[in-house]
View 1 (cartoon, rainbow, N blue to C red):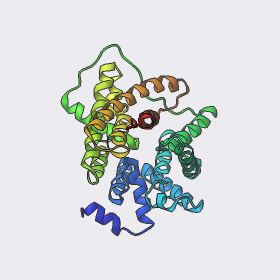
View 2: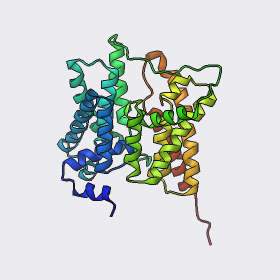
View 3: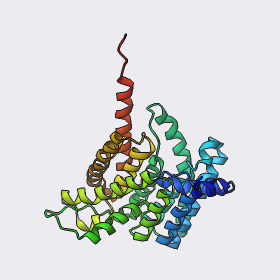
View 4: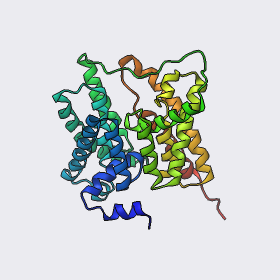
Length: 313
């Protein structure tokens, strides 16, 4: 038995469920990975870490209060959307006393909406993933926009020329692509996340690295603004997509590896399209390109499998 699994099993409830909720940000229902994720939030900033902790606890307690599936709660499946929506609001909203009330409300809603989305998407055999995080965040940010407090627009400008990036900048951009999952451009945060997932699965770590590479190389070839690329803004969606397709939801085979690469490319394309649509209202794409790509791939696979019939003998 490896030590991360041993520590996870020895961690008492409810601490284990809470830490697993943080770990599920990287698809890892492991307390050790969750600890790395939480540390990553605090490295990004004390306020960010506090927001993450509040969101994580509130969303998990909400699942208990509504008596949602206990197995899902223990796996941390009611924590990762809460932690993400809390940090999203802390990043895009001003640090006012009202912010903390919004974080609590949004975190509570994230668990309720995730439970509803899970039941709804079960019909199509699709995961809810981070859909509740995106939906709740968009609602709060649109409300803020309607009140006149517009959030900062994401960097999505496209230039006519393709700039050359030195190798050290490539590596930095790739690590930032991973760290942007936590709304951070800190290379150390990217290293913490990569280490956290590697403790659980080397394949998951390889998928994350490959997704980060796609998130740098493809936007560069498309002529995306180099500053956005170097900040990792076009990398976190292919990172999430490749981990999900290449490791979490499908069997680990050479075929799924190729499919994961294709999905990573689609995630970047989705981000370009959605960015152009959402830019006029100043709303960030968040993880929506990852969600749409994942749903497209899994829906197509489910359709293919259900359409395969055995010839009569």
